[in-house]
Figure 1 (cartoon, helix red, strand yellow):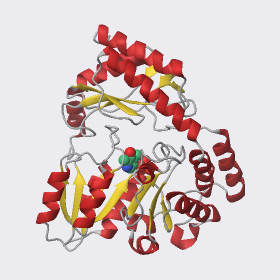
Figure 2: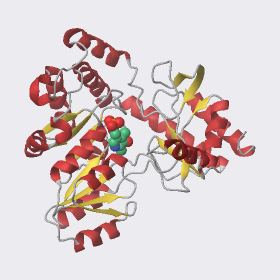
Figure 3: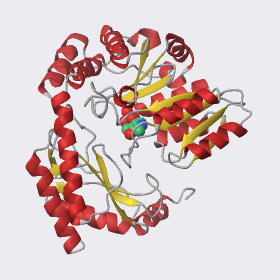
Figure 4: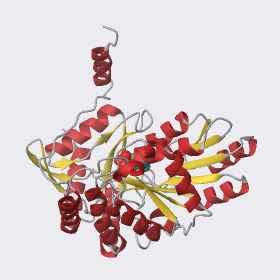
Amino acid sequence: MPFDLSSALAQKKADGLYRERRTLASPQGTRVVVDGRRLLNFCSNDYLGLANHADVTAAFVAAAQHYGAGSGASHLVCGHSAEHEALEQELAAFTGRERVLLFSTGWMANTAVIQALCGAGDAVFEDRLNHASLIDGGLASGARFQRYRHNDMAQLAAQLQQSAARQKLIVTDGVFSMDGDVAPLPALARLAAEHDAWLMVDDAHGFGVMGATGGGVAEHFALDAAALPVLVGTLGKSFGSFGAFVAGDAALIEFLINSARAYIYTTALPPAVAAASRASLALLRDGHDLRARLAAHVSRFRAGAASLGLELMPSDTPIQPLLLGSNERALAWSAALQARGFLVGAIRPPTVPAGMARLRITFSAAHETADIDALLLALAECQAGEVA
Ligand SMILES: *Cc1c(COP(=O)(O)O)cnc(C)c1O
C-alpha cells in the first residue's frame, strides 16, 4: 500500500495525539447533549451565548425563507446578496474602517490575505503561537517567512532591522487562541511604523469580548486603520454565526476583491448566514451586560483556581488554559471531567508546543455562577485524586 495510514494512526494513538469527534444532539450552548449524555460545556468559543440566540435564529430563518438555502455562486459572479452587502457595511461602521470584505471562513480570510499581499521578495513576520491558518498563509505566500518568540518585541525588532525585503508584513493573533493572552499591539504598531511594515491582526477571539462595544483588541487599544491596516475577525466565535471578515481602507478591500484567490474562487456564504450575523452584530455591540457577566465568570474562576493551587496561564480573557504538560495527563483530566459531567477539551501538539498540553477551559456569558463553582469542585476532585 503506497500510503501506510494505519501505522500513522497507530503511532498517533501511541503518542496520545489521536483526535476523535464527539457528536452533539443539541444546539451549541452551556448544556450540550454529547454522544447521548448531557454535559456542562466549557470548551465552546460561543463566548456570548449567541450561537443559539432566538433573535439570531429568527433572522436566519427569515432570510432563508426569502433567499433560500444557497448563494449559488461566488461574490464576483452572482452570489453577492443584499444581506452580504448590508453586513459588510455594518461591520465597517462597527470596526471604524472604510470597508469590510466577507470571507467564507477565518481560515480562508487569513491565508487569502497574506498570499494576496505578500510574495517573493517580501517578508512575513509571525508570532510563534499564531493560529495555524496564519502560519500556513505565511508559508504558502512565497515571501521570506520568519517567526519570533511569543510576544518578543526585541526579537521582532531585530528581525525587522535586518530585513531587506521590499514589503514587510507583521502578523499576530489579537487574543491568542490557545493561551488566552493578548498581543502587545501598541508596541507592534510602533515597530511596524518604525520599520515601514504593515500590521495584520487576526482577532478571532477578541471581537465580542474586548473593547467597550465588543470591537476587540483594535477598540481596546484604540488602533485605527493607519496603525492597524489589516484587521481580521471571524463570525463563528463570539458572533455565534459563521464566516469571517477583513476590515481596512477601501484600497485594501478593492485589492483583495481583485486578488485574493480564496475570495474569488469560492461560493459566497448563504445569505441567511449573513443575516444571522447582522442580528448577532447588534446583540454583540450592545452586549455590555454579557461582557460584564463573562468577566465576572473569569474572575471567579481565576480566584477559585488560584486558591486550589492550579497552574493557570496569564490570561484575563474567557480562554483559561490549565497547563498539564504531557498529552496523557491532559487526556486523563479531560476524561475525568467528562465522567463528572463536564466537557473540556484536551489540547495537544501540534496545536500547542510539545510538553505544553492543556485543558482549554472557556467561559460563556450564558454560564451560571453555579456552573463555575461546579467546575472548580470537579477540578479540585481531579487534583486530589490526580484524576480517575
Ligand atoms: C477559529 C480561528 C480561525 C479560523 O476561523 P474559522 O472561521 O473557524 O475558519 C482563525 N484564527 C483564529 C485565531 C481562530 O481561533
